[in-house]
Picture (cartoon, rainbow, N blue to C red):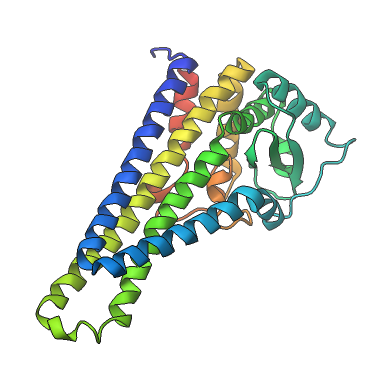
Length: 297
């Protein structure tokens, strides 16, 4: 099998992520243009202003308080200095290797093996791991997982994920407002009954297709960032096999039953929730593919 430099893998994933962000902006532009054509200029302007305000509020809350909300939602707690000394030392050592401040460390009591990083930037970041992860992984495997999460922090993936979530939310807000306006403004549009059926069909199709396509793009971007964090972990630890072995163990043990909502599932090392639509909207790449790429480095 041809060996792939982790530097090449990092460059490829950064390029693909930028292209996917451009695609998401294009989807938003199509939605805005289409709905502006359907609405009167005054209504369309109000729609965009309201959506912008809602997006800014959501961005502010997510950026400044999102990490606290996430940690509380999974009942994360500080580690025991004696029981979790190796975890603490591993995080401190890899933060030095990554050139970032040492993140705050948390432990989640769970029989599922998982971990995640959160925070708005490397200066305000946290790493959380489950007790099952600490109990079942050996030294090199744990270093691989922590290296993956440290890479998310170093690469500003949390900020990137917030941007993508905001853009997807903007599409949802615009689509929702349009569908509601069909009900609110039905009386005013009775005078142009001949066109209303066509406008409703076009508007509904745009709203539905935009929502589905934006979620697909969000999933694709998240998967690219996971590949990037895998490659970056290999760079930090200089041992891709440690992370590959950890993924193999996790895939055999986890049942996808960790207590985490879909809203935060994209933050985890592996998807904590199993869903029938995982093949389409999964925010994590297939584990076998991740292992294959790591072992090709």
